[in-house]
Image 1 (cartoon, rainbow, N blue to C red):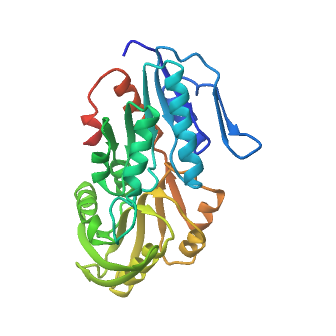
Image 2 (image 1 turned 180 degrees about the vertical axis):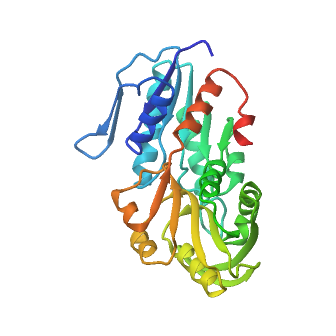
Amino acid sequence: MDGRLLIFSGSANPELAKEIARCLRMNVGRALVGQFRNGETRIKIHDNVRGCDVFVIQPTCNPVDHHLMELLLLIDALRRASATRVTAVIPYYGYAKQEKKTAGREPISAKLVANLIRTAGADRVLTMDLHAPAIEGFFDIPVDHLQAAPMLADYIHSLNLANPVVVSPDAGGVGRANRFRERIGAGLAIIAKQRPEPDTAEVLEMVGEVDGKTAIIVDDMISTGGTLVEAAHTLLDRGACKVYACATHGIFASDALEIIAQSSMIETIVTNTIPQSSLTSQARVRTISVAPLFAEAIMRIHKDLSLSALFA
């Protein structure tokens, strides 16, 4: 790209955008992101973006619909202002759990969101740890899918835990847990669960040896905390001496932090793809920044360099 590199942010996670900009030794672009009196989202770009390579940083976290609309309008405004390329940087991709129909007469929301982002004018997408990797195929534009596992594994490795075992809280996360296990040199256990209804989990059985070991539950997101706490109880009942938890996206919906604080887990580690409240410290939640990784990815995309080294 010959154009200037610019970064803009919506209201979803401005602190992460500022941190990414600091890593790149630049400032976040000037834009008005607010609302009209009738509740409609208002966007106005104050900087000249003509001919520029622009990255819009906006996770679609709670309130999901509002932040998604901000993202779409920011992309549209930048496209109409003659930006050469617009990349949607979506650290957390909302509606990712609805990537398939689980019953008749349901939407595939993740596909619809992908269509909206493309229609708004995004040229490519940069995201992290999609709940369903197949969502990449919903886009007809390039998607760069970063992973937080190396950073989370480095932190776990620095704790020098005795006799660790990595635990997948469901069958769908076995691949993720196995890659994490290889990074820290630990054993593997798998918990089988079922969901009788949305946001509710029931543990059925467990495969693997955890007796006398330090268990590390690895997942892509923590929403209500129900799956996490149920898994921790199962592990302790099976003889695990300590339980830690790692996840990329700390959603912490409803009273999740209170539930986690009352559990017997030693520590829960998440990233700042979603802004974390001051209450996380009370629940023994540690936040690891993904800003350096996103900054490196943005610079590589801007300079048309390979991103393969970031996936190692």
